[in-house]
Image (tube, rainbow, N blue to C red; front, top):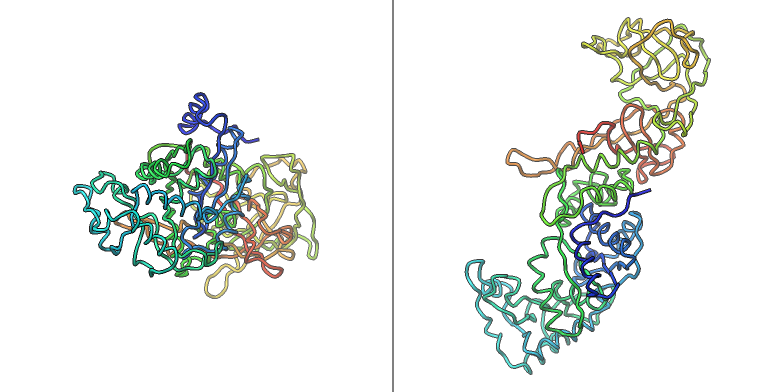
Length: 546
């Protein structure tokens, strides 16, 4: 059972509002993604915070698509967003589209014009940028700023009627061109875009800007606390200005900002992630190397591990960077008592047990999870010919190497003691097979105690072995000599190995511990009846300490 949602500074604000009756006993939040890409682990933090807050206060959380920019949006992204939110374990109360409110937004813009708080501007984008000023210098008024209200109303209606081309004219809020906050220097609130919209078709050729649309959407839905990331802090005065100047909502929502999630060896920019997909650096948005929720799901991460990670890192007011090892520790902790072990050998070496009967196969019993006896045992085959892992043999052993080497005896887990007697090589000097002998008195569970061995290794019986493809991952991004993140050319390494027969029955997204190796998941896209492909989730050992 997951622990109760931790309190944080946002919840402290909500507690005060509830005590003072600011919104009565209501708490309503929203998760408002733009459907222009797949969600990533940073969005997971926002999802957990918004939905978790609503759950804590027995309130509501809406899913709302910010579809005010139809050029970049796609229904594929909508479907992926809903799959991700549901997979993480959350359910929205209502689903809305920003485009549901286009009529109301247009009405709000007209209201601002009537109040002398907005005007139609014919400066082009470069000219507007040139008039904006700098952090040290105030901006300059547009020559169209003080035109008559009637003219602005007429021109705005002409914009709506499609009489202007894209980029020819905009509607701007009339605020303060000398404001120290550049966002308040007569920002654009409507632009012309002759683009078909997935929801409204060709009804509109003008579309509201995010900073104008977002507060109106929140107000219409009755959002009490509009929780967003820290980059919107400088936009809060504009958020409040829009709602207050339009004046349609007597009890407006409160915007609260929290620090966005940054993780080492990870980029969380939709633009950069999209470029990785478009240029073929990764297979797709759900490539297991990607920090997208879809990528993490395909990689084998669990919803609980991601929720736990978001809870552990907490909610802060200042940006910081979290070690990716902390995320890995969360999935490792979630899997260690849940998944069964399977024997898989990589870089396999053939072992011939010369004194074992030919054509005989016996079954040996091994535990499914040594940490959880309740998960029971399974049987694995054993015979004269086996595969062992390449890491478990050294022809010339280093100091304190207790695994198999010429003349040494080791335990085969669940089976017998074996001793390496001879190394068979080809003409090039490559090891072809190891000839070993076994001691039949030493079968696991027999109570044999005449001598001890220091090394225990695992094996896969040769005649029943399943050949599998294994995908090992390194971080997608690494730092160069200038401390800048660049693509890691070695982020994917495909290899293969032999697995015990039960692995052949694995289902898509089924997870296992490959004994002594790490946690792996059957890839749902690449696996088929003829080939099993496993993705590395995380290793057994953690470098991160609480």
